Length: 264
Image (cartoon, rainbow, N blue to C red):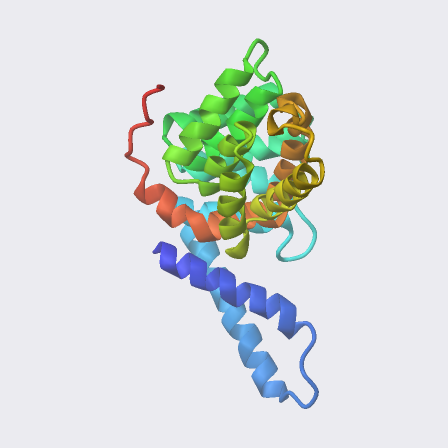
């Protein structure tokens, strides 16, 4: 099953759940039934592909279950589908299992276990895995991890193609104007983390402009920034996570064989 099919199906399903549940006045009953049939046939096809072992289809069904596209979230089903795809080395599914354990979705929250899954995807050079592991590293997970190691992970997420990782790295270097440019660009194409960070940087720059006597280097230290990163990560687990999977995964997989850059 091609990635193009999965993306097209996603768009059609979103339209289905938004509009089919609330048909327009005067909508013909046969049109409604026909649209329902198309959606049902697509779901059946995805399930068939997943049962045959297609990791993309398995990952898609995991996303549907995790984010409740078809109703309420089903975390157990999500974990099962992601595990089947992850067992075949499907990077995004490995990351999503980390998300489940990081946030305690249907399981006991376990940051160390989440970090282990993120590390597996990092070993496969998956951009978002560097980003997620970097955020955990900045929180001292695994124990003994330094801030420098967390920043290095953010840099690697940037180098392997995740632009918000580039912006976050600049943010930690207090290069707010450069970070803002990246965050605004990524926000425009739907990255919720980038939107949150763009608003934060706007506020910081406005404060710096009104406090002429304060030097930029006196802005809050990295520990203060961690709170914003946690907010951003929470958003990524919602719409941002879905956006990354359906919008960025093709680019990420195309770059999957790029070696991580050597540290300077």
